Length: 171
Image (cartoon, rainbow, N blue to C red):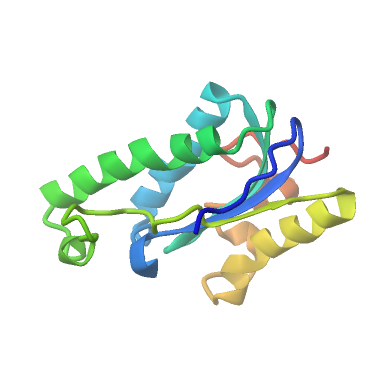
């Protein structure tokens, strides 16, 4: 079943999407680095602001504000090219998970099918709650002790250090 999107211009969206079968396809720090660079590139190209993000080994959480309200082009931009390039890299390197990435049509798949999770955020309290949830994700998983220690997150921007992706902290 397709995810129902409520596209409202300049409205914050909390989105989550996972790697195929929740495999740790973003488990390699160099792959996470590439994905963070992809976030930066696509936010400029597709004109959306990033409020918060975290790139985990098998999924991504984001709060974005598409200027025109349309989330589908944002999701496509963040997923398609990166998936194609990363699958090629994995295939070329003989990555051990390649055999587990075959979808129903016999082709390799990077992202889980479907739209993931998408929720409109209705105000400052809603946004702050989701920002905290996003930043605490690596802590809850035991990957780091402090949110700012996970470099593939906007927690550094909120913690006073400058992260890689330009983050807009207020609506």
